[in-house]
Length: 115
Image (tube, one colour):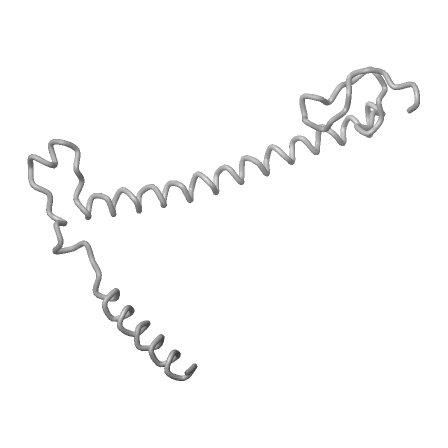
């Protein structure tokens, strides 16, 4: 029983694979007439160019964003090192003088007498 079922499944997968391998939008309405183009309908080639263009510039936006984040992190580390070594202030202590809430580090601006 399993042998017949597996043969049938293999045949179905092969038939589906052969029929889907030739699937394409080209030749199946890929050309857009001028009336439809005036209404904003794009051809398959135009959609493909737009997609590739968005992928290309999206990649470079991601790269530049990563570089900007790295520079921002480096400058923040320099700032925190200066505060730690020259201003004698650590983020994990609550002195009541400084607040780092704007950096999202979770320190409260209220004075804690326990630290």
